[in-house]
Amino acid sequence: MKLSKPSFAKKLTASYLFVVAVTLLITGAYLTRRLKANYLMNLETSLSAQALLMRDQVAPVVLGSDGPSALPALVRDLGRRMGYRVTVVRADGVVVGDSELGESELAGMDNHGNRPEIQSALASGKGGATRYSRTLKEDMLYVASPIILREKPWGVLRVALPLTEVGHRINAFHGDLIKAGMAALGVAFLVAFVVARRTVRPLRALTDTARAIGEGRFPRASAQAARDEFGQLAQAFGDMSARVDEKVHELSRERSQLAAILSALVEGVVAVDHEGRVLLLNPAAERLFEAASGNLTGRPVLEVLRHNALHELIQQTLRERRPVSQEITIHSPQARTLVAQALPVTYGENRAGVLAAFHDITELRRLERVRQEFVANVSHELKTPLTAIRGYVETLLTGALEDKAHNREFLGIIEEHARHLSLLIDDVLDLSAIEAKRVDYRFEPVSLADITERLIKGLAPMAKAKDVKITNLLTDKLPKVRADRDKLAQILMNLIDNAIKFNKTGGSVKIAARPDNGNLVVSIQDTGVGIPPGDLPRVFERFYRADKARSHDIAGTGLGLAIVKHLVEAHRGAVTAESEPGHGSVFSFTLPVA
Ligand code: ADP
Image 1 (cartoon, rainbow, N blue to C red):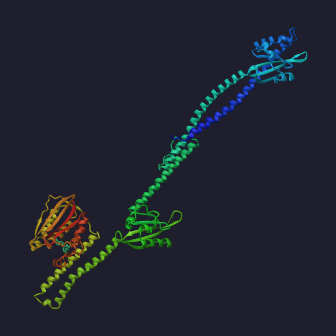
Image 2: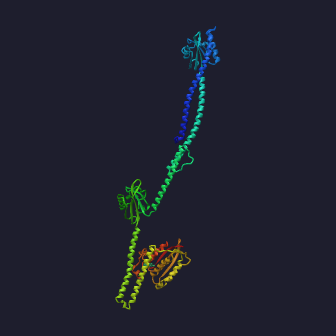
């Protein structure tokens, strides 16, 4: 069994009881002594008075006719009447009468001349002593008074009282004292108990509060705390706990706000101390640099981010104490271009560090590249028809104009190239407007069947020329889609146009749709030349044309599918192409149901 340490309340109660007990003991001992002395003094005084009276009866008897021989009987009579032991001793110490002894026993008594009470009675007229009587075998109080005959001390009358009585009285007093003491102890215990409990209550509350704070809870002060110092302490402690709680909450709120901001930032952020050790690293930075997982705080930045140029940038900022900005590239997990901006910062007590932010400009760089390529492509695409037009114009100017057999044909070719040129410019303008999001969309529920029907009518001459049969399987029963009417027409137009353009003579085009998970999947299937598997993933790229040689025969810009892809995506849909070279292709796109 584990013995628990005595509590403060128990200790307090015990000390109370100890103090009371010691006080009682000391007082008891002192009172007993005083009482005994008092009692003895009173007894002695009354015995002395009685001894004097009895002594005065002895003298006439000694001087009487019978002389001293009458003494034993007188002494016995006196003893019996008074209830004391009475002894008469001659001045020479011989006992001549004793109330407790017969005459025969008197002779055997030893000389009493050396007894202190006898000696002092003879010497000073008064004697007293307390002593153990060998004759009576108990403690006795003796009082002696001299018997004066003819002006001379003849002997001594001694009165003796057993002290057993005194003992009894003292014992009775002790008994009373013990009872009173016990009662006092009982009352002291009760008082101590109540006081200790009252004292300990706020202490206990204080302990509970301290323990709760240790466990991360912050209790408030209880309203009914006592008004004494302990109560005030508990109150102050509770108030402190409440304030610490508020502060902790405030700090953790600020901390989580900061953490939320840092983790929401697309930019990577890393803070390092003056030794180049990581103080903070946000998730974007962790992702960018594929930082090792676990607790990275306190580890050298080079070890965490594993990038020499960045490490050098941070060191430079620490050294020069000025903002440094630099473009850095990372190769893994993906090739990325970042602009790293490092700022010197001061934190804590004048401690210097560096805060570095990384802005991912990979996409920006890619777009720049794409734009350059686009410009190059457009220039190239524009050059082809322009060169042709210039060639034929020159031919006409240098004489062919008069050549009746060919001049119309040449002009026809010039017109075709000019149309292609304007088509190309239209598409380029369209595409760049779509890409730059300069196009407004007016989304509304649109019936696919209506739009398609009208488009097919418009394309009928072209289909007829190629002997391509168009089957429209879209009906009014289909749910309406959420789309911009004009843009949807542009999507369908491009896809159906391609399906006719890249078809075989006598081929067919089938337009169908099916609902799929809140979307409508529209498919345009043709029986045309198809697209080689190698080209399939690239047909949606700008200016990309599968099977270049043949594509150029068929007037096209190579921008149609790129426009389709952008428009479908603006409708929150996706476009896919499947093809079997030589047999045909299927272009499908999804649109959300209205
Ligand atoms: P264009 O039709 O002006 O050449 P597109 O962007 O519409 O440009 O098409 C890109 C290329 O994809 C075409 O040049 C062609 O090679 C291929 N393509 C598009 N649609 C089809 C189709 N239905 N069948 C076969 N090839 C196609």
